[in-house]
Image 1 (spheres, rainbow, N blue to C red):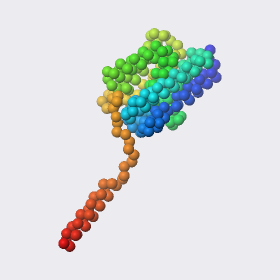
Image 2 (cartoon, rainbow, N blue to C red; image 1 turned 30 degrees about the vertical axis):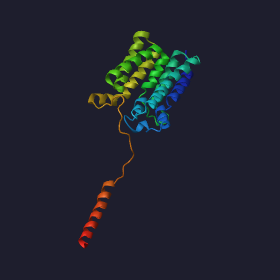
Image 3 (tube, helix red, strand yellow; image 1 turned 120 degrees about the vertical axis):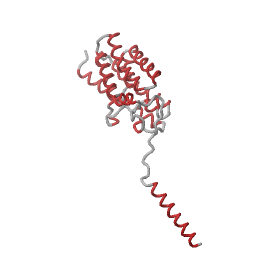
Image 4 (cartoon, rainbow, N blue to C red; image 1 turned 45 degrees about the vertical axis):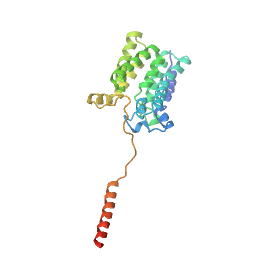
Length: 233
């Protein structure tokens, strides 16, 4: 049985791994706009894709998924019990959603949850990923695919593998994913949600305050000058 100290250690390890902001790191490496400044404002792979760089989006996706997978893999490698392994994965997910590195304002956690599920049970992870892929392919909404996958994951675990510490971790991640997708749900109902691959207008920085007033005045002075010259002629 896992001791309280072990649970705290693996929770801290998972949270630290989860707090690595791959979306921001990769975007800076590729000289892209900060993913928090456009689109959904979410530092995740889907929003990085909206910047137009598929390579950066794939690297972000891989990095975010690796956080959840690595936290659980390391816990299992050192002989942690099922509860501690589940805690490590859940903590990595929480680290991504509430990272201290970004002022506790992180991503939605879809990729990190997928990585954790793959480490927890590869078949559960693959079944959940397949659900996401099918919904995304048919409807072209990443958010809708994530919502449906989050709803199905706990049922897959319960119906096929039964009650375990893993089920509690999966339920917790699914509930948090649904909570984080509330704005997307509203946009889906309103018909304003962005589809996969859509490129939003990137932030271009503040515009000058009085550009319009300057030029007409300048033109007016020129016009006045010209009419004055005509009068002299």
